[in-house]
Structures are given as C-alpha cells and as structure tokens.
Image (cartoon, rainbow, N blue to C red; front, side, top):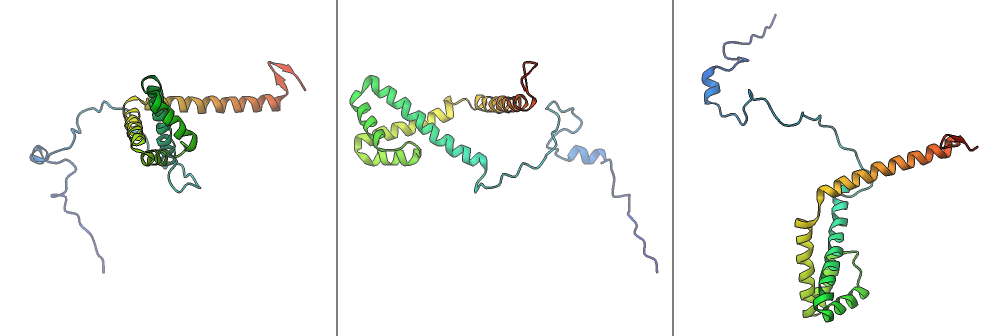
Length: 173
C-alpha cells in the first residue's frame, strides 16, 4: 500500500492577496527600509561561575552602597557650612558606624535620635536624587571600558618587556 500526502496550494500562498494585506494590521511596515543599526547576532552571554547572582546585580549592590557614601559626603559638606552642630553629630555617628552597608547605616542613623532621623532622611533623599539625576551612567561605562582596555594593554606590554629582554629596542639580557 502506498500513501501519499497532498498539499492543497489553492489555500496556501506565499504572497497574500491584496485584500488580506489591506485588512491586516501590521506592527511595522515591511516594505519600508529600516534606518536603525544593522541587526546584531544574538550570542549566549558568558557564564560566570561562583556568583549566586549575576555580576551586574553584585555591581549594582556596590553602586548602591557607593551612592550612600556619596550622599553622606554631600550632606556632611552641606551641614559643615550651615549647621556645624548637626555636622558634628554626623561625624560622631560616622566614627561609630561603618558606611560599608548603606542601608544598615541609614537604618541605624534613623534609630539613633529624632535629630539623627532627619539626617538619615536627608541622606536617603540625596542618595536617590544623585543616582537618578546626577550620576553619569554613560560616562561610567565609557571609563570602565577604557580602564579595562588600558589595563590589558599595560599588562601585555609589561609581559612582552619582561620576556623579550629588550627595552626601547636595546638588548638588556
């Protein structure tokens, strides 16, 4: 017994009829030339072993604590000029508490006293404003990439100098 499969081409078409294209709502216009950058191939990202979270998440946590550090510096500088008493209270608190965990620092500062609570609220406000409005994220990416490139070049150049026995074209070994 032979079996055969037949596809009815009268209902399948590679080119939709004019009626179908006029009534179909396209999310884009396929006949229009795209003006964006060329399509990049999607590659799998590098696997980074040993992290419970992504490296980006770890970096974000460090940046979060860094923004707290910056906010404390800004608030301290402001207080130094117009409220020396509050500045001294903040300095004394800083001597007793670490800034390594920004959230713990602010929580402890809030619980210290009502005056300290106002300082903590000011630090939280400045931390948020600095992160959202003043920090130059594009500059961070550019500087980090440049530092990695420059560091890689320096390490490779030092290795070449160490292993080639020549410096500035002169034999040293």
